[in-house]
Length: 307
Image 1 (tube, one colour):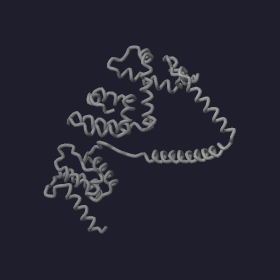
Image 2 (cartoon, helix red, strand yellow; image 1 turned 60 degrees about the vertical axis):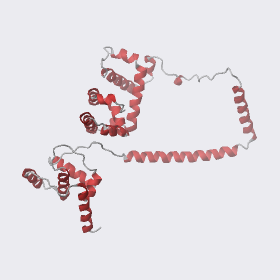
Image 3 (tube, one colour; image 1 turned 90 degrees about the vertical axis):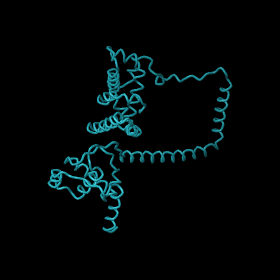
Image 4 (tube, one colour; image 1 turned 90 degrees about the horizontal axis):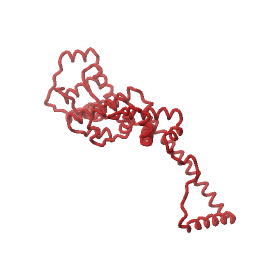
């Protein structure tokens, strides 16, 4: 693509997204700051474009998606992200991500490797089945199979006979709290008790005797604790940094406040449709005080089933 063709494409992109007969004003102080900061050509192009689509700056507006901005002004998406950060750093423009999406490429690779291992195991099983089929020509094996079949059929003719579970200690579920707590390792026990105490503290009327309450409700608490562990195992939220959790909490705050102020929960629904954010919320509401406080102070999260 020639330089002239690129310029024409950029011009066409801008014409589609802004009013060419309009104008914007920039205070001298802001222009001086931009000049002294030695903005790059990409920074200037993005700042000019943003001022054209948001000339008044009297409220937060919904911006075009980054690929659309990239197409309009002829700058790569990666450079636009860098320029946005630069403009915000200089307080020339402020923006906030409503919904951030991503993909863990390491997790994707691990999944592909696991899938390949399953394929290899399936191939081995097919080979073993082929060997088994060839072994069925042995008459002694045929007699054994026939004898087992006869025993099975005889057993099915007994109408009053009931299946009984094997007397395995591992198959029994704990009947009391004392039995249950002994099935946990020391680390799991501490984690379960901490989880249960947080649950008790989050009740409208927290029990005075927390341990007694846990003992009386251990079966329900156990189920909720397992659900939380499953959510954490899926994405391992505990491995993320506090700043990342703060970022996700900030995004949740934004969509909740927007739903309350505007009476439109579209962005809130989008937040919970994303599997990562949904799992993070279910994990965070039992482990993070800030999320529990937001949940307690935001009836909209209880009025509609976003979980």
